[in-house]
Image 1 (cartoon, helix red, strand yellow):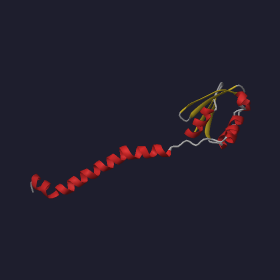
Image 2: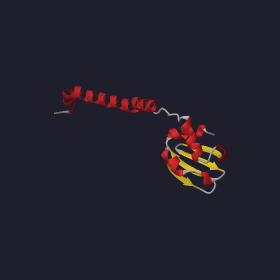
Image 3: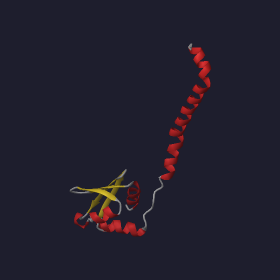
Image 4: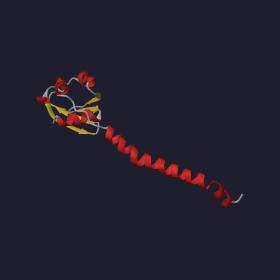
Length: 119
């Protein structure tokens, strides 16, 4: 069997396979990214939850600065002894890194967005 005979015999199968691959690539690169963006809606914390988080940081008068970068929130406090790590962990903080002058909180994107609004 020569190559041209092979192409004549399997042309329909080859063209269907190429079309299927193109369709899969279109779905992967165009459709799926748009779907995942729609499902990432940010939940807004209630005022009670905001108050709990502020109180866990020692109250609004204890907070000097809050800044975030992705899922990492940096909080500068006047008095770190008023900081309540256990309460924060119950409300979405996965890990805390306590430094001399600031505290770094590893949180979900939702909580980082809401903490940024507290500034």
